[in-house]
Length: 316
Image: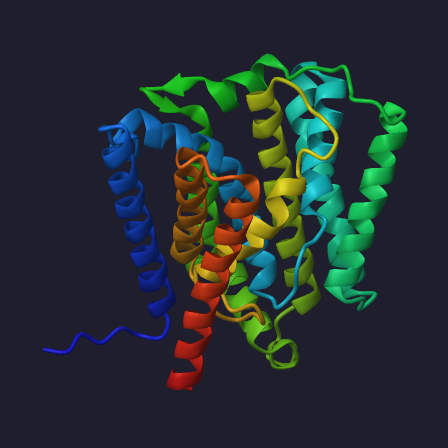
């Protein structure tokens, strides 16, 4: 009996198989070298998901923009600016301040792309550079002395019913994104605009509002990730978001979201994040040198993209 997999589900299945393969390879390695299997430990997996929540939230916001056929390269310093500003303000205003930074950056990015018609790659990269300059000016080029607030520390480090609170935050963001994409008019407009913006506009969709909304969501997600990362590190620091840009894009694309927009499911992005988190974890367990880790990490991503791209060409 032949099992048929739809084009929409194929990338998700491929990513899931890679996750299983990484788990098997990591388990076999640790069992042969140490006689233990930390990858199958509940506490270890929860710890990995806790640190992976930062990437997962960034990827959730990035997916909304990629579904439009755009890209948000301002995520690194949106995350950093939100964290640094929130810790500088402190107190009860820290979290609202971080979210306000994300909203402001998202509005700016959306306006530049939707109304000024500047390519998103260029405009968001420029915004990222401006944010970096503002944060350097704020700190005088030195590491900020401000520390995370108790609320940040709780959200990033504490546990609720034995599960890290950061995972609950990631779960809440995931639920909101999934509901938006599948059960709201905005979600349907997002897919329509990403498939063909001109046709969506002629059908009555306010495409400019949709573009701005997607960038605002991306900015807010980056600011939430910044709050969690600052809490996890107990402080904010310059460049803290630099490590999340390419993995966030990779997680979205590996999960099957079309880089040109119009197609993608959030479950795929979720699996893409888990794949990247587990891959980094296994390479760390193997004590792989940094050069080797980067080579293997990049090779897996390129391999999956090649398989995905080939399947797309065959089915088309």
